[in-house]
Length: 381
Image (cartoon, rainbow, N blue to C red):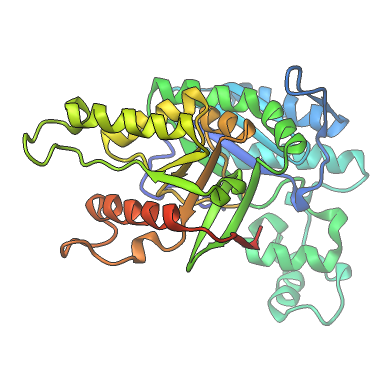
């Protein structure tokens, strides 16, 4: 039977060799898996009984997969109070796809959780008309009527159908985790190390966000002037009176040498640094060209105030990597992700979704941010 889960990347071979960062969210974001204790120096998640069962089920994945001829290993995991992260590596082409393995893992967690509460495993629970009234949708009544003869099970419902079904039979019979999951595909060995470090660093990140809400704020829709952005970090940086744009092309307009190797770039860096060190000045840049990227990284390493405009969107679960996360915790960074970047105007006739147009459009937004003197308005968190 095909997996009911939608893959993160429809063009990727989820039967083949690969490494993945998996994220699962507890239904309703309930903090069932444990609680955060300690501080940013010694962070810890004290697992609940359910959290310990989830951890054990994750560690048992290689043995369970081997029973079906699949070779995998788990590289890292962490149970946060209301979600789970794990890194899993597929060592050889499989008969199952990643979605099948994750379905089995989630079903095992839900079954153990519901057994402790005296409920039958939800994935194998028949769809019973006794659970809801005659006001139920027609499609559900028909499935329930066929249950005895055809064995209609909850696990055969679509995500939308399951949501309707569980709304009718009450919250306590929902699965432990939300219907879907997120997988990030590993690109190379360096990316794999970053995935593992991210998982292991999750408790510290969560504690910092709890302790420093003003500078670790994530907002999905913030109006800045006439545009909206997703934001993460210290919004107060927008109110600084002096903002300078760090902007340079990839090549010098005269010599055509890489701009970051030229004397002009060195002089500009000195001017940018002097402005930051001698006054209340924040650097603003998308950090796309090599020169912009180098100065952006210097700001992060030295703790200079920085507004970084990125092309990747910020959604409800997005978090920056460690270096930018720590800069946000220090109050020295604000990350902006413009809404509708690819809907902006074409540049020199080149479509807005191209890298060339994004480079110019993001730097155009950086110039707008530098001239902005008002107060950002949070529309949606």
